[in-house]
Image (cartoon, rainbow, N blue to C red; front, side, top):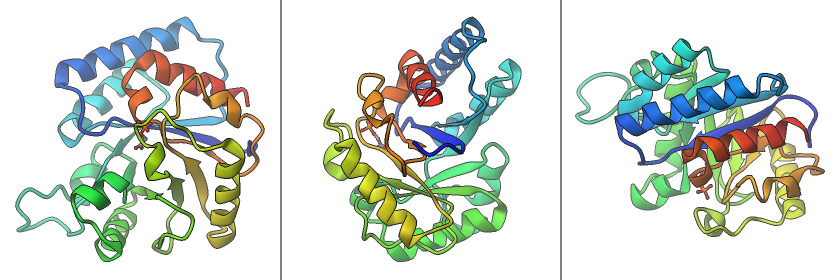
Length: 229
Ligand code: PGA
């Protein structure tokens, strides 16, 4: 595994009520306190709740002084203004430092294409949000100046089937050659049970767990595993 900082980005997708978000933070806080010796200095943890929960996530993070960054799962391609239903970059920036863009679920269910995704990256960058740009394969278009690219094969998302670590590492290397400035993550059924298989890969800079991130215990275990790679 790359020896600079590694990212663990939890994508909660369209899950959790307000109460469940509070529960998650309470449990995560307890785990953090109980494991004060865990050395997380080389890990950047990002949690991405749904829009209505960004506020409380940031509030609880601050209150508990957790080493967690907040991320959004999407962003409007437009600036603030007459775009009913859209959540613009300046609103997100009040609570978050990161934003997931181009997740395959957005591409498939919301018909987002390269053009709109490029606009989203532009909106994120101009306000100072770091885009985490998801690609289903190594040849997918990536807008320029994308800082973090997440390789997420569609067949591995939410299926329990993980990409062979060496194969994911090859894709990560390919993406790094395409985008030398980028950090490359792997996502798709990452869990505490299978993350150990990635301990020796060289080009993957972190992980983007979805399902496993909903459970604070599993998410914590993923973080701890990654911290000792
Ligand atoms: P999963 O989701 O870990 O549940 O497969 C990952 C993702 O879609 O980002």
